[in-house]
Image 1 (cartoon, rainbow, N blue to C red):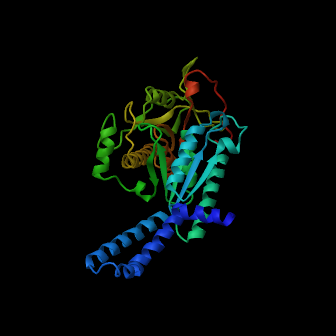
Image 2: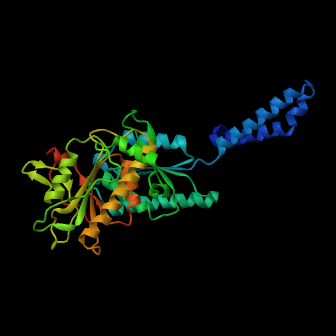
Amino acid sequence: MRWLGQLRRLVFSREGGGTVLMAACTAVALGVVPNILEQWTSRPWVFGVVFAGALVLVLVGWVLQRPRGLGVVVSLYPADRAQASRVIALKNASRSAHSATLVVDRAVLWPGERSVQGRPDVVEFVARLIDAQVEELRTGTGAEPEVAMYVLAHLQDGFLLGRRLADDAQLSMAVMHMSQQAGRSVVPGVGLGSSLRAPLGAHQRGQVSRHLSAPAPSCPSLVEIPDVAGQQRHRIALIVRLASAGSMVDDARQVAVTGQVSYGPGHHTGYHLPPEAPAHANGPCGAYLVIDTGNAYLPDDSAVYAAVTTYVWECWQAARWEWAQRLGGTTAVEGLLFFHGPLPIAVALGWLTARDRLTLVHHDLRLAHGTATALPPAAGS
């Protein structure tokens, strides 16, 4: 009988089992079973133990059946770069931790698509799906749901997704992280919330300083680039290395200082500068600053991730203000972010700088290794 199977699945589910446990143990706590115990013993301590145990089990039942929020698994890799095993690992992690899981897999939605990054239309579509699912949960429960996002994406796409998610100011979201240090375990990355904009305390600055290759009490200094023809003086380059990548800082500095994405024939940096209007070719930036943790990974610690994110954001704010003052105070300063590090931090930086003129410069390892040819940037990127 179908109804019997449905009842069995309900009873043995986390929510159904928790409800049954709460109902049964509430009866114990209120006196049904104590009345039976009176027929067996008159010792008061037995009733006390049973009562306390029943209360504990009521709480356990509540924990089992309470809403556990929404997990959102987002894979923004196209079909030719699909990472099915990692998507499965993230789906399993989400389903074990949350009451509901939304899966948005670009390789499934657009199976014929080939590698293209930085498409705002794809990011917009993903964000709308997330918004719709969150709104459905809000309506059903009458409360703000807990949301955790499990993301697989190029850094540029993660940055754009974070920027788009900032449009929902009420949404608080944790960005999870697939650990590089503990196999495929999924650990907390960065929480997208107002605390990221709070000034760093002494302890947080100490956490950041311990991982910088050149520890400093404040943000690194801007390095001004000498005037040359075609220079984009209103631009500054923010070079951030938070993971192992030996030549990343030198390559990004080369692009910032020369405006060229290669050192010469056959030696490409792998960077794609954002497209410009025809009348304004790319040129050197006006200045740059470097935030570098050296050739090492950050520890899998959400507190460290949050502190580093806030530190990078503070440095960008300070550099933008300083450069605007040097240029006269009325020039709109733009930034090019050369970033290598954990994806959750890229998402969080997009979220923090959603209203700023900051663009993450995409890096293609295949191009840097000479195994691919340069492609024109995607329209609208």
